[in-house]
Length: 145
View (cartoon, rainbow, N blue to C red):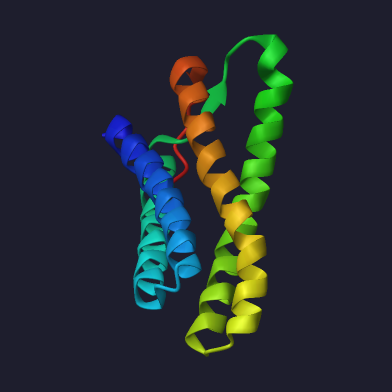
């Protein structure tokens, strides 16, 4: 079950990043209805990621890095920046969506230009972290609940 939750989490965040890119493509082609639908799909996939990740974390605890010492600094840099930007990503996404729903497209567009690179970084580094821990992860023990 732990492996399945991990796979569901990493695939949902990866697919949310792909949907995000496709949504940007659509709005640049002035396909507003499909842009709206695609961005809601991206948001839903990101929310699913959160459910899968928190469920896995709650049931099985965390996994520590146990890889080569020479890579430890790079891994923790990616992990810390990923975590901080992921924490920012959620509220910023809600703000951007709220502005779009209110028809405030100038603010929506301005903040979307900030949100999209953050979201893509979080999605990409989520995959990197998953792959590194899949190879070098060490069970740190303990269950969160």
